Length: 160
Image (cartoon, rainbow, N blue to C red; front, side, top):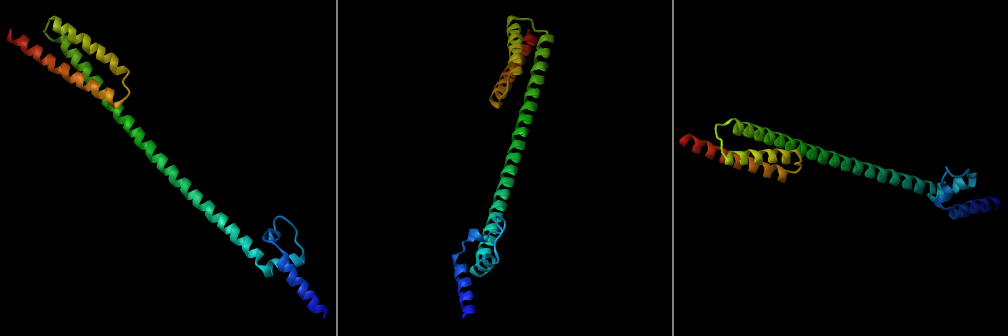
């Protein structure tokens, strides 16, 4: 009879434990608590919970890695665009400088030539502050127009 009484106490104790009671890291459980955690599945619930936390952490870690890779890729693209714009701006400045030198050394001596020189010098100053693709495109357009005007002036001068 004592055996049955002891067995029934153990079984009832097993029903009275919660999953929090079965966490071995937060307390020093007694033998009966250990036994009831083992029979009631409290230990398994703790293990399942920890495994779920690990999977969630792995998912978050993978997500963070993907976001970091995306950010690095985007940064590389932006850096490449900036480098391309800078190269384009340097080419425009060089072309502008050559055009200005050509105009100054030409045999044309007119007020139109002086006006073009002044406009090209202003354009050179403007190119020092250019920072966007639109500004660079505008400068390229003005340089092309100046070249066209210079060609017209030179042709008109050779006809005289």
